[in-house]
Length: 213
Image (tube, rainbow, N blue to C red; front, side, top):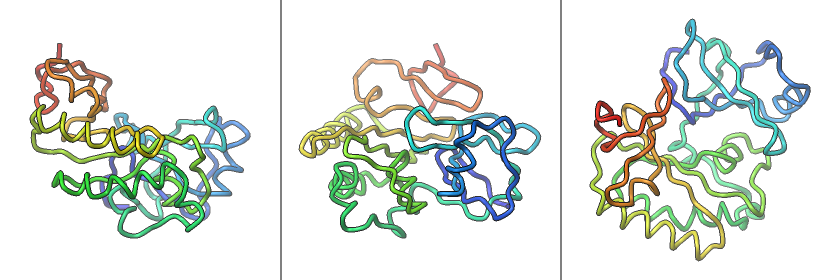
């Protein structure tokens, strides 16, 4: 695999991928059902990719490392919208209904975005993952600064749409240095917790991580 992967990208494993060492018993069954892992936010070690494996319950999460040669396909969050749709019956679940409803709101931002979490995993793998109570997790790539007033309007629009659909939404904004919560940034004057590969940083300006405080 020659391409660089980013946190929240979903990786389809190649046939013959070795078992993950020290993995709990549920991991093998989970990967047989849906051979996909998600890229974790961590510094690469010896060229390996930090990945997470999800099971059938919220408590089943396992972090490990993957050799890039076992990656058959990379699915970025933004690619999931154009290529994949839930089945007609699954589309009625609150998280998927909300995804459809916020699409025009997110598109107006001018930024590239897409679903992560359970919605993203189900779109990529085809394995039923979203439940009646699932939140909608989104990632928006924001390499250029966004002012707080615009962020507040954007956050309010997303929140109102989520309220209308009876579920919750979590938008992570991805800069070149890391990611932060739109909800945090939408509050004027608040410092923001940046999730970076080398750990969290409390910053004033997410696009200037040297301002960590």
